[in-house]
Image 1 (cartoon, rainbow, N blue to C red):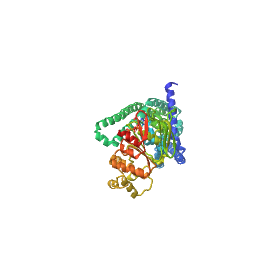
Image 2 (tube, rainbow, N blue to C red; image 1 turned 90 degrees about the horizontal axis):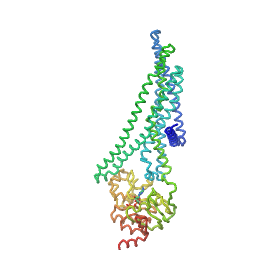
Image 3 (cartoon, protein in one colour; image 1 turned 180 degrees about the vertical axis):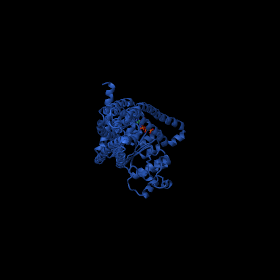
Image 4 (cartoon, rainbow, N blue to C red; image 1 turned 135 degrees about the vertical axis):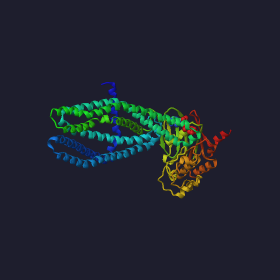
Length: 578
Ligand SMILES: Nc1ncnc2c1ncn2[C@@H]1O[C@H](COP(=O)(O)OP(=O)(O)OP(=O)(O)O)[C@@H](O)[C@H]1O
């Protein structure tokens, strides 16, 4: 066996294993009985469809023979008898064929629902959605969960049933065909096997092209979404020309690859089309010598053509479905790599160390060295500090010195490094990130996020809004149930105050504020920090403004070369004034 074939076999085996790993859980899940029951029903229906097809071949054999005999016998009644049988069969067959397709799609839908939920659960667990951003191998997880899962469940079922029905068809019509001619059966078998081998050989390249196509289409769509999400910034920069070049490049990449795809489909088409056409002539060529020798009746031609077509279709599923199979294989690869990435979202490399974390009532660090997730840069070295509840800490330092990264380490988003971190439970801490986060939903859910199921009456919500100086917001936007594109409708300062309102509602023991008041005027900032103090919330802030110092006891000053300095806020203020 050549090296290439060996590699191909390994690839096929791996693909099969990957397919099974994605497909199996549903068929062994809590929904397994419903799924298996439906599959069994579909099998029974496909038996019925097959029996109908076999009957049709006999009906037409008799119809054609009665027509051929007519000049001698002058008997039309046999002809009409079989026409009526055929009509009766149609009446029974139609609902069976329609229900078969309907139930197949129903099962596909149930499977998709289950599998998508499974992916969504894993995607939202252990912050996998965040960690995947740093995984260069997983592009567009959104497309994988939305599109690839849909295609996977649908196509798997279609193929499975196609293969099962093909086997049934093969067995029943081979019996029909053998009763006509053994040489006909053998020639058909050889023809179909050769066809499959040649198609698989020409079509190999389609698998990788299809894989690229899925990626490039998703990249293009993501580019468009990016423009929509950042419409205002682009408009201010007048960046249309640049954006348009970027979009066109992504589109062109998709188009070029598609061009390649259709060229290969054309190459395959030259073969499959001629292969499919020639098969019409084959049964006539094989039956004619038997007929001319007077060894069979005229109707055999019709029956042989039908049986031949059925068997040929059954044997040619690989040829017919090759393009779909390649697209399917590409989808399986994408889902399989996503599944693996979701199993181990933080991608901890073997041998690399992580910061130890324990939970306690206070926040402390012992000799913590923090690295970027790819382990390429050390941000801070040997950091030790201890903060009692009520003592605030403000992090200062140049841009890029690692202030936000320390907050990420406290939140458990980043853990590459060494040392020991003690922190309160995450439920007791609320983080307000640098860019205010506006959820998709109503004003009420905006305020209650991330615990939107809490029952808080509107009066209380109004009080909180008044505390952050947004008294008139509900009236302005149309009430607490109004759903708007909040990130674009509210000013940055308003978004920051809304995020602060969330904080006041949640009343966490610790508030971690990453430049969360940078867009506010000093009076608003003071008001908000005073409210946090009144709630006895311990604050850990990042900011460049001197005004923040007065609300915290300590200052952690980060230098860019991984050094740091911890001092009392008052002392720090004095050093700044000198
Ligand atoms: N996902 C990442 N992978 C690798 N490096 C990163 C990643 N995110 C940020 N960095 C780098 O880590 C360094 C520290 O970033 P960080 O956001 O902590 O800075 P910062 O001090 O908060 O800056 P600023 O004041 O501008 O917000 C920066 O040099 C940044 O480029």
